[in-house]
Amino acid sequence: MLKHTKIVATISDKMCDVDFLQQLFDEGMNVVRMNSAHLDEEGFLKIINNVRQVSSRIALLVDTKGPEIRTTFAENDIILKTGDRIRIEGNPEGISSREAIYVSYPNLTQRMEVGKDILIDDGEVDLKVIEVHPTHLICLSRNDGIVGSRKSVNIPDVRIDLPSITEKDVQNILFAIKNNVDFIAHSFVRSKQDVLDVQKILTENDSHIKVIAKIENQEGVDNIDEILSAAYGIMVARGDLGIEVAQEKIPAIQRALIRKAIHHKKPVIVATQMLHSMIHNPRPTRAEITDIANAIYYRTDAVMLSGETAYGKYPVESVRTMTQVARETEKSKLTENDIRVPLTQDDREVTSFLAKQAVKSAAKLNVNAIVTDSHTGRTARVLAAFRGSKPVFAMTTSERLARELALSYGIWAEYQAGKGIENTKESRRAYYESAIRKLIEYKMIKKEDRVAYLGGSFGETGGTTYLDINEAWKVLEAKERYNLPDYTM
Image (tube, rainbow, N blue to C red; front, side, top):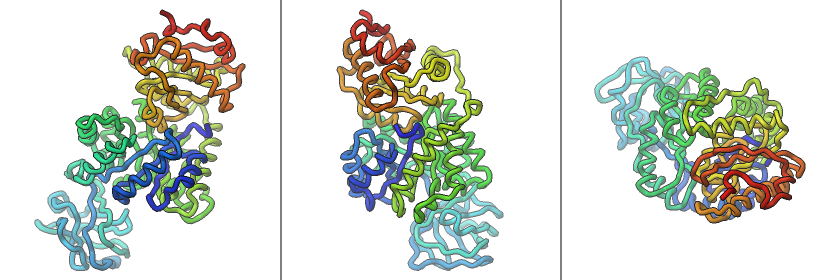
């Protein structure tokens, strides 16, 4: 286990051969992200098939486009100078030109006010609204810039009443279901309902895919508690978020969103421009190194690479750099900065209480690893929320669950073949012994080290009910004489 923090790497169909993916995996990549904005079905399948040749433990994540606005097709680039006036119309069928720039949002004029900004191409062009008419806007260019075809359009501080899922999103979600993808990262999530809209399609198709909510605007930030109640996890998508919200607010928002995710015991990914300079350069800037470290100090589960691995010159070096920074940062984390994970008066919180004690046992009792068997992944995710310093080995009852835990901090998950829900007491003991042997084999512990085991007396779906702490060698030598509560008849 190279590090506790997980790495998500964006992969394109132009750079996805098996040897390349194997290199990224060996350097510390845990999850492959596929951006639906840049892939067709053939490209998706190429990446998926190649990833599966490398390892069954690499999780697959697909982005949706979500309720985005773009400029329409333009026959030629539109060159703007500071102070130029330009007409903006909401008409998806219009062809943009110097006379008028058309955007894909028909209700544009109904939502706009004089003084608002329209940002095009990730903020490269900044337009100020100076006139609002029933059919169009008149804007003033605040900088020199070029507007090309189908560029992104952001309108900060304006609520956009677009449907959360486009027709293209539906097609991509159905494709993800058909090809057994692990995560859907839904773009521009504004409320709980946006997550439920995606979940409805998944449920109707009997899919186990988990939904990651991408937080990219102020509305998503404001509604984060209800979003986390519905989503499997969140992504702090700092690209569009930094355009929709004043950029100086992003660090505080990032910290707040990570804290919220930990309180809900849900995975959180920090994304966008983490090693942006390595798209072209073999070494990162000091600021980028500090950015990754701060995200880990803030207690994120995962960090993400975008262009660095999708089309950059130094993709393998980028993953290696991120792994090195994560490993060193994890060593120097201060326990006094740990985020308190609240425990409520709830029967389900027995798991949280025992997980907290297991993590604390690393410092108090010199425990060097925590083992748990997992049918739903809940105990493992709760353990991840406490951000312990020792690895958690999760024995899962399916390969899919092992991949789902690829986003959770400090979790090493492996599928253990067995009898599933009908596991006998012998096979459950074999699970635990196998986990200890693998921890020793991977040099994560020594035979004389103490290991904590979190289990449940009522089988795989009965919840966590006990914590056992013992030396690894004692468990291995005792064999059938070693009895845990769920081993008894």
